[in-house]
Length: 456
Ligand code: UDP
Ligand code: UDP
Image 1 (tube, rainbow, N blue to C red):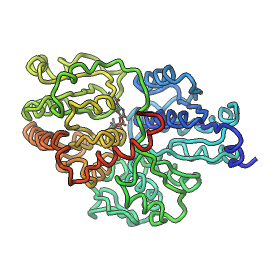
Image 2 (tube, helix red, strand yellow):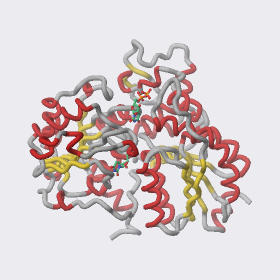
Image 3 (cartoon, helix red, strand yellow):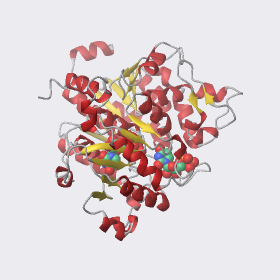
Image 4 (cartoon, rainbow, N blue to C red):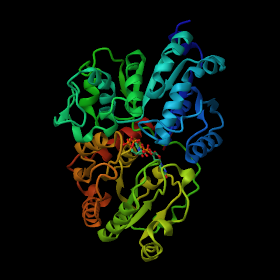
């Protein structure tokens, strides 16, 4: 039976296969809920064990609030303890998931009713090619980064095969056909080493993109029009499947443990939200400068502080990280927290006027969804390329001189100045600028359109 007939005659059953880390999990959970609302049967295949508590907590909370969702755990091979090019636990886990992906075959063929399609992370593409061919299933990739960084990944195997390519070399920029050139300073440092685990994982899996039925991208036309058109017109590579913008993915229903009472008491648009995602920490010195910078800005702030890359290692209270005197001094004008917060709910709160963040792509799309201006402080990986997108779309400002994480100590003075700049553009003021087509306002319309069936 052809897949088309299967879709016409039975309820579609879609398997979703995320990779490791919160940034690769949340978009899959959002898509899962969207598909279920469209009357699909959804099975989420989650790698086990996870690196962080946050991932396992999120999965169990999602399943408890979505009892119709099916889950299969996928026992992965033990990650290497280290690799000569990195000891980042998330990179090592991407690698372990990738090395275990051949075990997915029996799992996928055993589910009932039989599957209609698979949506999987780019980082398991290589192993899935032969599995989906055997099962005669269409495979879609859900990309968890910007279309711009995705284009760089698509083109990475070609770039690395060219003898003249130099990442981190003397040339000013890297050319991906059809795209505005990418400054060398935005290229993730691991790409300069073709043997780096991160480079190798992207290179090997990106080669398989042409075999996918389509690539779902958590972006939208207004945000990245030229890039989407370059990908879809054959400018980047001629053999690509369609790249379908489905973003910004809508946050799913969830029970909330964190109280937002403090925010409820703050005036509209008065608070700057400061958070750098689920796996990024700063040095002690940088945390101190950031803290002082926030004080100097004079604005109220809601600061999520991470003391370690993996939450399982995060010990000690706020006072130990920022200093007891600092915490005491700021207790009336700031909320500082070291636990998981429901970020999307924070960003949706009317008190939030600006967002200092690392440009993890999920954070960017959440800010875009709520029209919150950003101070981009990209620190790793795809984040500088994502910051270019933010800046170009008029959604935020970016101080390029601040460098990658740890490259230099960004001083409190500078941070305070930039926070003031972004907050002077905060929500209340944006609402007055009717003649400028603010992306948040435009987004609001498409968001409402997409949700008109499930929301009033
Ligand atoms: N997040 C959250 N609470 C936290 C930390 C993170 O809800 O305390 C969510 C955030 O809203 C986003 C995701 O986790 O959806 C982080 O993904 P992103 O791509 O922004 O950054 P990464 O964590 O991958 O660096
Ligand atoms: N890192 C991160 N988020 C990312 C990429 C990296 O938090 O998306 C952290 C990670 O802890 C790693 C460090 O940044 O150890 C340096 O990352 P880099 O990409 O330079 O690779 P590595 O140092 O592992 O070679």
